[in-house]
Length: 415
Image (cartoon, rainbow, N blue to C red):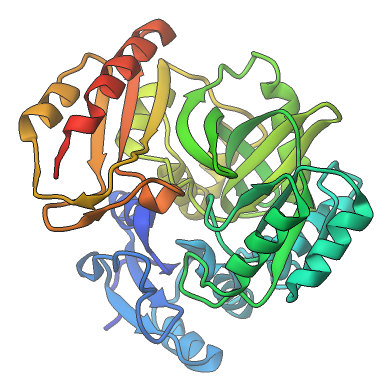
């Protein structure tokens, strides 16, 4: 039933969208959850619905809008990428601050995303899409340049992403995508092939209100290429004045405009190529690597609280953040742990976990596996074994603890 407290709406509050309800609660708002699918998305842990006023399982737009009107919500936010199109439709229909439906496709479909940037005159990859592996191979051969990158049209992170150096590798990768499901459980009916973007890769996280963008952080990815797969290793906080952060921030602000992201959070991945910044992809949602308590320490703010502020007190958001960028308080790093192990986890060595947690700059260790679960060689983000968040007074201190964690990581799980 509706409550007297003002209300916000989160669509598909999976993963770290769990940080949104407590952020709203701190500002006196209750939250209603909308589940965009008949059943929870199988590849994600279901959200904790106890923190929501109600869970509405979406069947059709008219019914969901009718139920939401009872709460007179102030905003509708996508918690994860599958919820983006529905959040756009609901916010637009309800007359709330919205990114609108005109460019919804460009915010979810990676092909349409790059074409929107190209139309805006921004640097991006050459590309082709098809539901047939032979057409993908023909395009690559006609183009005559390697490497190329193959990926699903509507996934996230490194799911199904393969770097290919030959036509045979392209065919195998295309067939693998077309016979699989994406990270959200939907069948892949087409595959996207893009020119390989050279250069280092960066994360640029933002929060927007009325088209005014605050850059909440820039991080440099360091990945390892294994069998055509780019495996996450570490992401390192970049001081905002250090090259190429200013250039990246200016580019991403233009990219957000091109994609119609006027409200709410966004997580952009950008390559700093020989031609300048070029977008890998943008998600109109919180960064998956964002932990509010860690970001508060190293940045003095976090994307979840900023998203809530932008929707509940836009005047304060504009005064303090709009058009500006982050000011780090400490050095920081996220370490995503890969493995070559294959077997069943018999136990977690809590002593080793405690040793990692006791390191001076380690702030949080998130284990992805429990006893009885299968551990497999890492091929993507979903098969990483844990993530360690570090922040401290200097980059040297953080890197020293990163090296210590690497020395201990293979002892965490007992097979």
